[in-house]
Length: 88
Image (cartoon, rainbow, N blue to C red; front, side):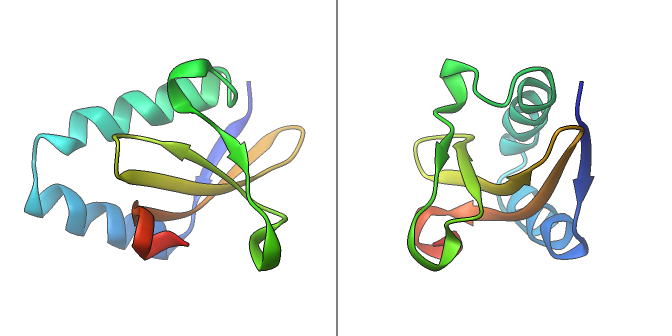
């Protein structure tokens, strides 16, 4: 099972999101657990990004909230979280 490593910017942004909407905390934690178990689980809708973000992946927490990350054999580096417009 890969190890999740959040960047400080991911932690700050996640904190802002959950302060605005506390109900999202449970959804974010659920998405992170699922991401660790299987980064390509269907509920996450994980997809590879293109253009200048082509080395990254994104998955869905809700219809609008995304997690952007990089993936290696044993590490998932959490880079950003936010709305579609904020992270792309």
